[in-house]
Length: 278
Figure 1 (cartoon, rainbow, N blue to C red):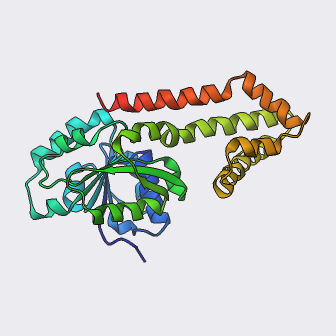
Figure 2 (cartoon, rainbow, N blue to C red):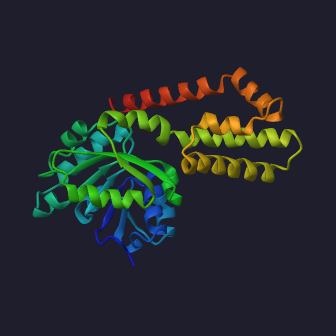
Figure 3 (cartoon, helix red, strand yellow):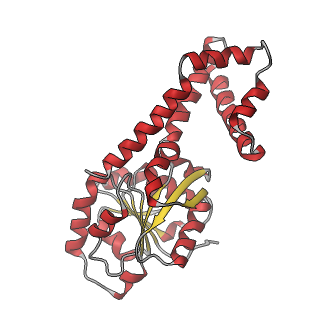
């Protein structure tokens, strides 16, 4: 039985939208009949239809029919998309009850509220989710706009928290979190690939090396979360004096792994902020 009665709409049906939508369906938070997705090329929405979800190439249909509307287009598409909706929109009493949720990297609430100012009493929430939401292990931070009520926040939190962890933060923190949690999965996938490559080089079959690398990262992450210990303490617990692990850690230090990852987070955060200005 669905945990939410509202109709959920996605303007833009790309990877982030699909992670959220399919995650909500997999968790039985909504039924497929409650979801509507729009995109400029209907043929690109096939994976949504494979789940039994209705699709359309008409963004306004989503605006008109949905109660909770996720804005999932690329930042540079926001202006023409919002202008198109403005031209088609006729104010109704339903406007003040609709909840808009942006996942656009770097686009601030002030800009979002300006673009959608044609919606009376606009309730806009800015979010930064990540793709592991698809399997219920995601992270989303969010900040509410001017007319968002506490009950709206509670509803969104319930939805997003069912897909991992959700937390309200000051809007000024969202771009920084994007560099850690939003872009972070790509960094970790690169590390998993490198670990697997190292295993293959040492004679471990590819599939086994990849599975072991991924499981090892999963276990290490759970150790951090469940023990509450600082990662450096947990690392020291693995490094025996004169053993194999400390030799490997020394190689990571020589390769400046920590500095490289910190730089990646910094550059990704800066780029997220830049995207919102275009």
